[in-house]
Length: 535
Image (tube, rainbow, N blue to C red; front, top):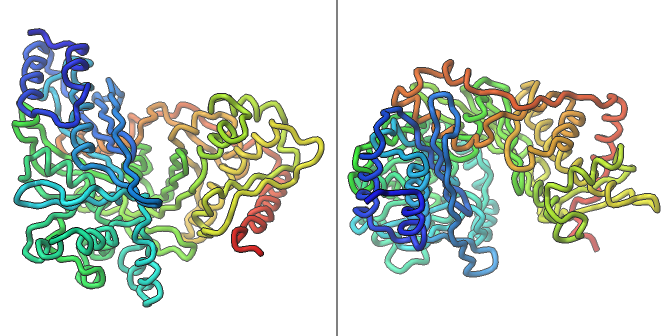
């Protein structure tokens, strides 16, 4: 039998959710036998909220091939978001097999596997059976919001912030674990007996890859649980007591770049080292080679995630930014300050689907370019409230400054400027918190292909904006961490040489004009605040 890409698609990728491991192994054996050149590669898992991806990188940090598969989203009640852990696992297995088959690789051609993952999503399973006791509760899930409000009322905010660098919110894992223990029949008793395991998605994938042998997470994912002390780099007993979670439920915390174990023979014929783990945003920061203090990246997706490398010590924000562990490599722990923006690409989607201004998202750049400026129109896109640095859940979207001369192009340009201004506000807050001067912004994510948006971003901030040639920075970061641990790449200096800019956007706007825009933006933001509470 000759295994082809088409064969894999027909027999493996259609209806793949519950795969036979031996079948996959047989297929990979066939692939191994056909491939004669022993060039080595790194396989990266980019396990996201709506899909699983697999990417294969060569020694120059280039993407050789990739595969992606969406999996179901489950919404049991308003504000609840769940995934089936089996869907996460099986989709990741399927895309790994597909990516390898596309270029005829077998497991013996892999130097290592790196994992980047959706971060705060919570999975609890029975250690004895390996079966989850409940669906994965996704980071977006809000079912524990009232409990988190109670924690604030009881005065736990300062303690939790000082230990974790986080604000109390349903976003993080701790309250999700507590909910499962309190609401799944028999769960708490099993936990007290030491029979339950908790993991973020990275832990679940490693557990499955090793057939239950290895139970581990890395410091970046641990720092998003609200149970991990970022000062001591260990699970915190006081926090565990607050949330009522037994320490026995928690995985070993390891570095972001080390050999944790090798894959079980059920998954690959040849053992492949699992050698890199990082939360997706931290992985993107590393993939952008923001490895020096003061370097910052912005990922433009539905929202925006900005992370600033703060070096070897955490900064505890006075502007509601999150202090988090970026990564730990060898004996060095690097921290980051993180700010999230709720609406970025969502603004363009609204112009497309809500107003019908454009047919495809790509058209927004051409429409906005039809005018030289915003016509004094400002758009605050706080559809679902404001994230950092304002954190106003009652804010609403605001379009202000409209005159009879306003047209679609002005509104489109104001929408792009609204994305850029929000990012500017976060970076200004980061500079205020840390005293670090930001000299350059590295960008990635879907909206970063918009040249006009990137130029606006540079103009309003007054610093260069740099877009890389390799866009898949999350997978690249995971690959780099795995490759460093296995010796695929010798050191960080070698990796730094791989990073290349695709385009550099330099400030071109008159300073006085830029200052006026920033002032009017701040005025518009104040008018949007607390709108839903207005009588």
